[in-house]
Image 1 (cartoon, rainbow, N blue to C red):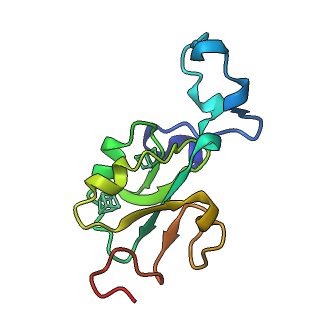
Image 2 (spheres, rainbow, N blue to C red):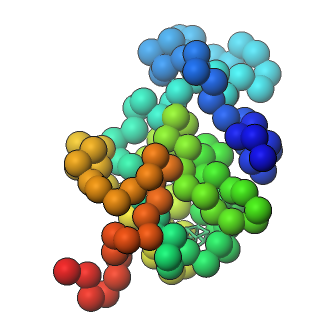
Length: 130
Ligand code: SF4
Ligand code: SF4
């Protein structure tokens, strides 16, 4: 399945604009233009997910205000960092607490996560976390 068809989510194109290129006052000048702006560039916190514990309930996908949760084959497939603004709502609503947000500055040094923030080897929010 192409990125463009993941549960109706419109993926970012390579020439998407950053928040600095958004019209003054955030005016929406064209319908359906949100995919053109890489709003993720203003993110301070980055969500990460432990796919070993994820139960694919898709509550995070329903609640994300920026349609930044990838879903394929009815399974949560990580985050669209081009648009995720790091609001932490997904972290709050996940019933099994397998999402964790970390500071962007810390996230860059983390190992064990793919480019959509998924891991199956790093423990996230487990009670006996080392
Ligand atoms: S809310 Fe949590 S358990 Fe449900 S799909 Fe999202 S990450 Fe997985
Ligand atoms: S942090 Fe906010 S914007 Fe990013 S994926 Fe989670 S709910 Fe969506």
